[in-house]
Length: 183
Image (cartoon, rainbow, N blue to C red; front, side, top):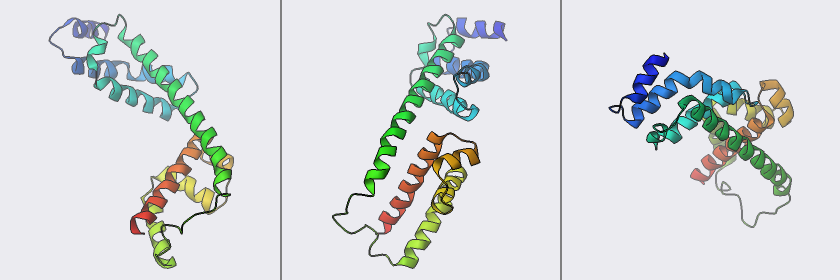
C-alpha cells in the first residue's frame, strides 16, 4: 500500500480532495486507534475521525506539504478529541449547576404550551419522544419515566455520564421545541 501512497502524493495531478479522500481511506483505522488510545470510546473515536474529515474537506490542500500525512492526521484527530472532551466537561459543569437553579426560578409568564389541552400535549410529547434517536430516547425514558439517575443510566447503557447529560439536554430541548411550535 505504501508504494501506491507515495505515487499519489508525488503526482501533482491529484487535487487536494483526492489526496484527502485517499489519506482517510488508507489511515482511517490507524487514526481512529490513535484517538481511541486517549481514552475515548470507539464510537467517539470514529466520530472524531469523521469530524476531522469534514474539517479538512474545507481546506484539503493542507495535506500537500506534510512529511507524514498519517502523523498529521493522527495528531489533528487527537487534538479534536481533546477539544471535544474539554467542551463536554465544560458543558457538564455548566448544565449540572444550572439544573438545580432552574427549579428555583419563578416563571414571569405562563408556559408556552398553556393554551394546548392536556391530551394534545401528551400526544405531542409522545410524538416528540418517538422522533428521538434510539439511544437518546432510551436515556430520556429511563430518566423521566423510570427515574434513573444519570449515573445509573450511564452504567445501564454502558455510555459515559457526559453522553447521558448530552442526550438528556437534547431530548428535553426537542420536546420543548415541539410544544412551542404548537403553542
